Image 1 (cartoon, rainbow, N blue to C red):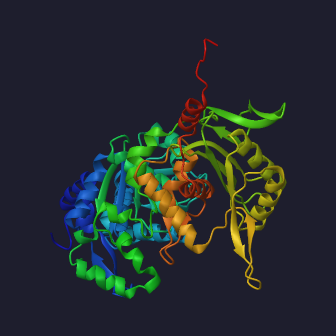
Image 2: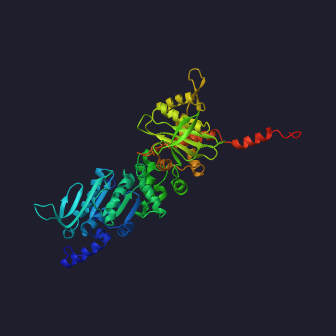
Length: 528
C-alpha cells in the first residue's frame, strides 16, 4: 500500500476495517512503547499476536466474555482497540468502560484516544466532544442546538460505583480489572436492562491478585467453566507472549520486594489454577467448595428467636430474627457452641454457631452487628441451653468477648475455659472463653480446611459458604484473613467449635444409655 492511497483504495480499506476489528487494529493501530522500567519511549505499530487475534475473534462473536489473563499481555490495548472500532464504524453506539478508580478510567480511555489519534485522517470520523472521560464521535447540527448528527457514537470511561451500570441504552459494557472492581455484581445487574434492550455486549477483563475484591468475577468464571453461565471464557498464560519464558518470570520475581514475591505466580500465571492459587489468593480449596458444597446450600428451616417459657426455651418464628435453624436439638445428641464476638457496635458481626458433635453439622447460627455484650451473652446462654446444654466456647480476645464470657458464666454453667499462668506466682487460674493466639489461629483454620477437604463438615448456610469462598492468604505474612468488604466471623465461630470437638470427641450417648439400661434391668422372678 502506498503512503497516499487513492480514493478507491481508501474505500476498500475502510470496508475491510469495518468488517474485521482485528484487521483494523493490526493494520492501522499504534500503541505506546515502554522500556524495561515502564517509561514511555515512543509509539509502535500494533501487530497482533496469535492470542490477541483469538481475543478479537471472541469479542466479535460472543455477547458475554470473560478474560482471565497474566499481566503485560497487551489485552487492555486490544480491548481499547475493539471499543474504538465499534465506535467509529457503527452508528449510534453507546460504549461504557468501568475501571477500579477515576485514574484507571482515564488511563484506559487514553489508550482509546492514542489509537484514534494515530489513525490516518481518512479513517477518522468527526469528533463532537472530547474530554477526560468521553470520546464522542459526531457532528453538531447547529450552533443553537445540542443535536448530534453523523455517526453519533460515544465512548465513556468512568470509575466504579453502585450506579455505574445504569444507562438508558448500552451497546458495549467493558469492565477493566473486573476482579478488583467494587459493586461488580450490582453493576452487572443494573446494566442488564440497558444491554438487553438492544442486545448489547459485556466484556470483563482481569488479572487475579490478592487485592481482588469482586467475588462476582470468580463466581461467573467458574459457573461459565461448568457451562451454567452464558459467558464465554478465555485464559491467557504469560507464556503466550513472545519472549516470556519461565526464566523471564523468575527474573520478574527477583525485581519484586521479598514480601511480594509470592504474588508473582498469580500475576503471571501459567495455568488457571495458578491464577486462583491459595498464596495471595484463596485459603480454602475453591474447586472443592464449588463441586461439593455449593449444591448442598439450603435455606434455613426456621428463622426467629428463643423465648423462655416454663423454665425451658421455645423457638418463635420471625423473619426479622437473628437466629437461623437448619436442625433443631435432638435428644441424646451433643453440641458445641462456637462464638466470635465483634469489637463494638455496627462494625463486624457477633456470631454464634452451634455444631452437632456426631457429624459436625452446622445446626444453628446467630449473627448480628448491633448487639451489646449483655444481650450477646444471654443469646449464647439460651442457644447453648436449648441445644442440650452445649459447651459454649466463645472467643474472649477483645473487650467485648471478655465481657460476654464473664456475663455468660453468671447465667450459664457449661462454659469453655483455658488456663492462665500467673507470671509472678506461677499459679494457674481459669479464664473463661476461648483465647485465640497466633499459633492456635492457624491450627483451627487449617483443621477446618482438613474437615472441608474430607467433606466432614456439613452446612447449608450461604453466608458461611461466601466467607469460605472469599477467605484469602495475605501474601505479606501468610495470615488467613477476609477480603476487603467481606467477613470471617462464621469461619472463626465454626472453626473454634470444630477444634473444641476435636479436643472432646463425640461418643454415642444413646448407645451407652441402652447398654447401661440392659445391664441394670431387673428380670422377672417368681411370676411377678
